[in-house]
Amino acid sequence: MRRHDGRRGGWRNGRRDRWFGHGPLRPTLLLTSFVLTGYAGVRLLAGDWLWVTAWFVGAALVHDLVLLPLYALADRALRAAVPAGRHRRTVLNCVRVPAVLSGLLLLVWFPLITRQVAAYEAITGLSAEVYLGRWLLVTAVLFAGSGGWLAYRLSTDRRREVDAPSAE
View 1 (spheres, rainbow, N blue to C red):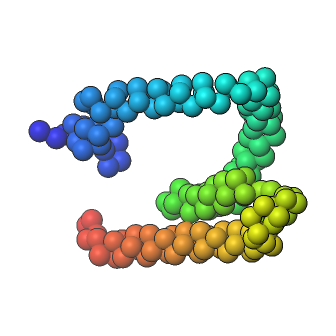
View 2 (view 1 turned 30 degrees about the horizontal axis):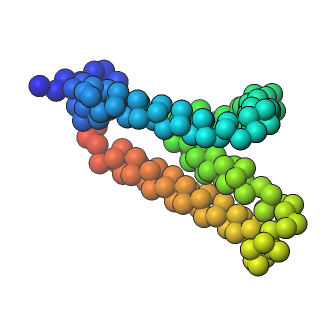
């Protein structure tokens, strides 16, 4: 028997709990991921472990001391710009998701996007000139898709409001 647990759209003993909360699948996946991470760590640290460790510590410090305050400030500015209302969370997420995906792409491809890799063309025979334009195009597509999703969500919500019977 499935009973509603009081949260928005949540069901106890439903499909979500079966896949993510109960049963042997979750501990097995967790154990597998820990074993794989341990193996990768041993292989990574087998080389120059001092520089690898310094790089990880530096990355953690840069994230915690520089990047986290920056994107927390950006999110606070976004929340201040979006007016309160029924659809506030939907609007915020339709800006946050493409911004995060675009930021991750920028983080991964930063040297090529900013053309700071001198040996790239010599090694690969390919031009690094295309990465900035492609990143901007992918970012535009992400935001356009998110805007389309927002328009769809708002139109279906308005349609439901119109079709709903009034309580008299």
